Image (tube, rainbow, N blue to C red; front, side, top):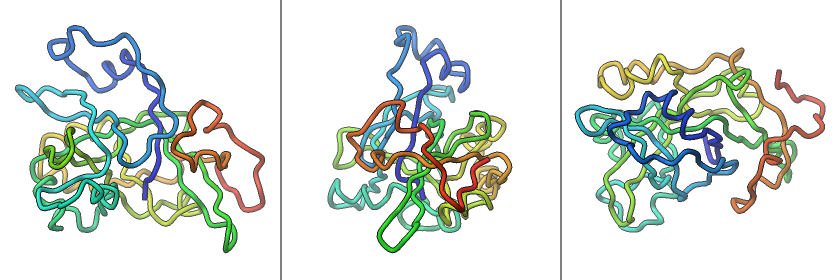
Length: 231
């Protein structure tokens, strides 16, 4: 699954990486505050196709709300969509057909059960901090002021499996156009699990479990314990 993630990109980095148009952002801010602990039901940046097929950067609420949802709280149960069923499930199939997005991120957290009562959080990213985006879907606003989104998950690769049995579907820049522009190629992207040797991870402080916790210290490595496998 994916329950917390980070976005430390500046506006200039986002503009270049996602090939965003100056036409849509003539007065864009020069920078954004880095975020180290983005949590469900919070707003975060996604990239989707907008006017004339141009990529646009928007802030949406994390936790997709389909039109049949009856409460904003339903979104907290729909922060993730499984790649195995996302194209056919009642909740996501319409969005999969016509409302794909790229969820802007540069890392994420997972929790590993180390005993019956203890879970250790880990920070994960592409090796050497390489760029990626989460495969996502968005839905038009319903019961909330903002449009909403979900992150697609897939079975964990061998490295992530040391922490959790699932992981977000991480798309590299070469996959982004296919995900956004072609339903047929979007379906193929569902099998593009990032290989184990392209992931690095390390244990971090349990403070990340509190969504109010922020700051660079959240992704700092703490002392490893027996069985950790991050590099």
